[in-house]
Image 1 (cartoon, rainbow, N blue to C red):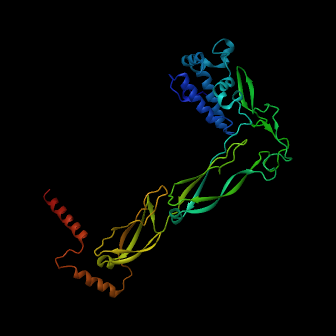
Image 2 (image 1 turned 30 degrees about the vertical axis):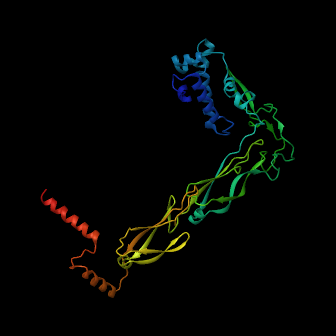
Image 3 (image 1 turned 90 degrees about the vertical axis):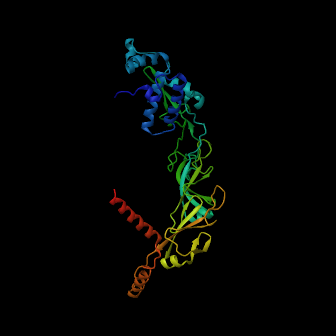
Length: 379
């Protein structure tokens, strides 16, 4: 399989300076380090690829040979015949140089270093009423908990773990491969630096098992869809005494049968019959605070918007209360009996021949259509 271009591997230009190459390597190596991606074969392969690219491009002689001859100029197999390159620092030494200040112990991850636990996310469904008014709910969150059988020790007898004899407690071992001295995760302790001699049969020596914990969540007034509530320290537990992560509760507001929300305003549709629309009247409409009366003026057309001040939502971020905006929908009567139909025909006939315009939108539309056809005759 052909190798990728080393500059492409590190994501730098061919004229990149030493500092840029080192910065790119540190970022990628931290991302794909085996200790952070245990059991991930793809990340392990990327980590080795990144180290190899840095080993070449960080050495001026090797980089020059690579720029002139490509991979053939830095092929280790050519070193025995006098070509290519030889000697120099191994990959393990280079890793020590770049990451020694971060990991300590010559680049090896210390088995006693404390690590912060991972963050968790929980999607919390709320009704619109609870989101607007605020509430308190209890949720069950899946997380790692101390094993009940071994009380978190990982040992059946409760004995503390012993230092790994293979890596001496460092969690890393060095492997000599030709010209290279490669530093790898210890295969015996898997990077932990210690071994439980009598692992717990319940947790397999990890000291942790999957479980659930119940947490009380206070939902503040006015939260909206997509808002997040952070609960500090309620995430995954840390390692080696490290602090726990955080829990992020993501608010999901269920669709309401009457209201919809946009920022601090609430919207609803109010159906009215054509008699009320024509003559005016009052009708009762709901709000989240109770019922109120909405006055409908005479000759109201469908789609008319009525604003009810301060009947909306107060945002969780503060500020004034929004409004309730009611959109009137004039309904055409259905299921008419014979008498009702006759009354409507008589009513319809009474609207003609008086010289008055009872349907302003329809009349203006018809006038526009008439003008359109008249203009066509002269075009």
